[in-house]
Length: 383
Image 1 (tube, rainbow, N blue to C red):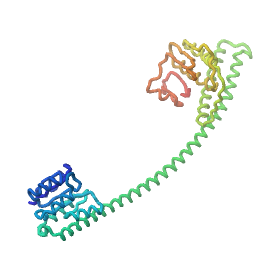
Image 2 (image 1 turned 90 degrees about the vertical axis):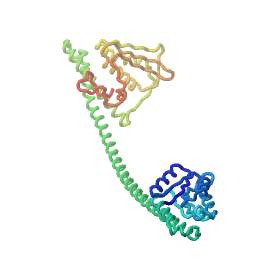
Image 3 (image 1 turned 120 degrees about the vertical axis):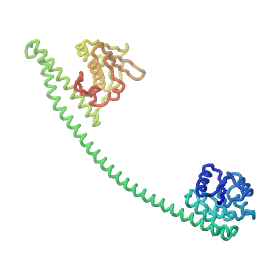
Image 4 (image 1 turned 180 degrees about the vertical axis):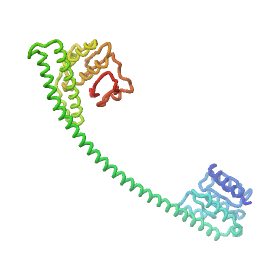
């Protein structure tokens, strides 16, 4: 049974080699550097030395040269395991007398084939023959070159396949982009058509609604004669309903303008304390109908800022209307305060409030926290 000395400073690699060789019925010894290996060889000569090149204390080239320089050890075949591929590395291997190279990473089959070839009886008979050593090295280098060429061809094939797949993906991506661009164009056209339709319908609806509100107001002023209590009640319902419908139409039209980018903002100096007072007075009757207390807290000094009067009023009106709508008991408080260069308007109520998980829905158009058919408050989700 042939004995092989493995010289490897990596315990993992050494154990891997040991297992592979022992499975082929070789006896195996281990050394973790060149100096220890040389001492082990001089003590008991193995049949073959399998050595790494890059090691501490004494590298693989130095170990091989020391073995070949000793007449008593020169006939021991030395196989160098290397990840080095430069021509000077090969030259150093020839100069130190190496019998074979095995390039990392190597296949188990190839390594065992080289070991078996160097331990063959006919090879042992030629031990120490420099010419045979050069032949073995040439065969080893040729086989390594063939292996590298096969690996390069395989990698080239993989690169070609990857390039083909990339080209296919590029075509698919280009086609997808064209389809997305087409759909975006259709969506933009549909959005423009929607905005135009909403503006047209809103205009057509507002005209008769304004007429209804105007004539209802004239009747309530008794310009056409006296009214019974029931008639006044019915006219009040008509005017309130028409006003509510007009507000909804205006909200929808505003959303359409915002989406179309045609919403115009006209800043002007606005006395906020007066505007807030007027807006609160507008909804005071709504609060009274539900027996809610409507409180207003204003600063002692007038506050004037540059803003769009209509937008400011609409926002505050929406906040107040929602606060009153969703408050059943208690009241609503409006607070106006100057905060440095900014203005703070706060609307607080004693209603149910908004759950944390529903707060993301606050500024989404047509979104309602209670969208069931049994909800107790109406609305479009635009306020």
